[in-house]
Image (cartoon, rainbow, N blue to C red):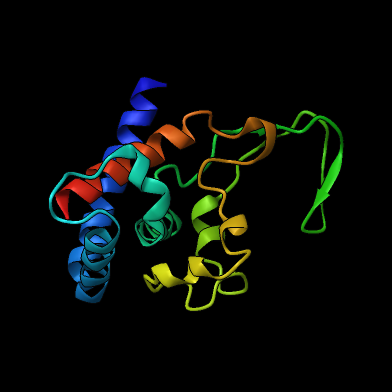
Length: 156
C-alpha cells in the first residue's frame, strides 16, 4: 500500500506539473487563486485546500488523462452478469480499463484535451473511477489527493 500511494502521488505530481507548464493560462489561474484565497504572506496550509477548487480541478483532470493505474485492481464477479452485451460467468476475473473510460469521447467532451474547467460542471467528477468506486475503492484516495494538492500549491 505504501508503494502504491507513493508511486501514484509521484506520477500524478509529475503529470500535473507537465500539464501546468504546457498550459500557461492554467498556471496563471492557479496562481491567481492561490493569491486570492491564501495570499503571499504565508505558505498554504491543509485548511486552505477546500477553498482551492481550481487546484483540485487540475489534479482531477490530470487523474482523468493520466490515470496512475490504467487497469484498476482486478475483481471477481460474484454472480453471472452481462457487460456490454457479453455474458460474464460467475468467478470471472474482470479488469477495468480506466484509461479508456477516462478518454471515451462518448462520455467526455474534448476527451483528449487538458481542460480543468470541465470539473466546474456538476456531475463530471462522478464519471471518474481513478481510485475505483464503491466498497472496493482505494482507501488512500483522500491522502493522495491531499499530498498532491499541498505539494502543487507549494510549488506554484
